Image 1 (cartoon, helix red, strand yellow):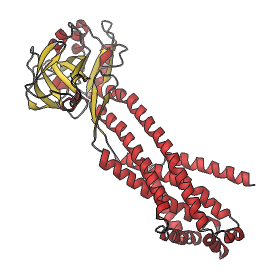
Image 2: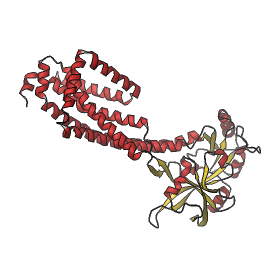
Image 3: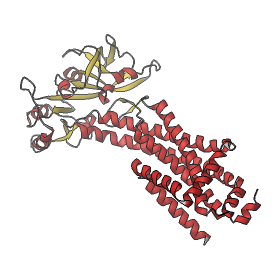
Image 4: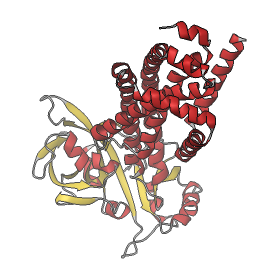
Length: 438
């Protein structure tokens, strides 16, 4: 019988945890309302509330042991939210780079711009496709672009320490397909000149990124003439004239991609069909929104998995800390619990009371951990080598409400596991045995 009871508890535990993982916040709020109603309006609930109030009132006498639960869970939640905020910030930066009304055309079967090479004939044919918006002069808004890797000195690093930056060669239409890009300091580069404008993210990463300063790219001296901001992945790039970049890096008339402005997002399929069905072209077409979403998926997934694995490892430690603490608390209150049961309190109110006490401590720890993660890491600047690029991507960590809710869910799950078995032990302990325990 004991084996069956323990097996049932294990199955219940697994079912609750699985359900809890997928539970949205509004259903959790509904469960809290139902629990509050049960505590207020039923006899068993009233007994559970009374026992909980007694247990909470003694927390001052058990401050040290209670702090083990709070601090342990706060640490788990803080680390988990920080790592998930890194993945969220990375994904948001790339998602903001694309839009539904622009499309990117690359060589067929190319996973990214870095792997794509379009010859001159393709670069000429692509802007002639139907569905592309036109400027005031009647020209198609299409920007053939070149992407190459460049090495620059790291800001604050050793004299010989260099990092990789993505150098993008663009033409005059680059501004029309990306209206969010604005010069915030200095001026734009002049066509045909070895001049550069740098993103505000690149300014944070590399030395010498100020207007008027000369840097060396491809064994040539280039002058930084301006700084731009886009509030997306473009902030991590350096831009120059496409023809000059191609000449410096011996790319001839080839380009990596062509980014176009669509006359209407609804015409995307027609635009895509006209290009992919053209026998003279072998290209793949995506909206820039889909393209950058795909680029963010792999790295963001790895970061999230790392966060979950680290959170699980730390959570197991916090869970055992909660188990030890609550078993000790139950042992210390054995006579009190036995007395309550002897005067008519049932086992369920005792179980619920101990669970509520543990989960209250877990909730406090979760809130503390989430608040600390938000204060320390929200907006914190980080960088990594982005998938599908040849340079560092500068981004800010984003601690969102959804991530804070995830942290609180983890905290309550740890509290549930840590309180369940001590609570069941207290309810199952024979009254006569408990009265003899110290």
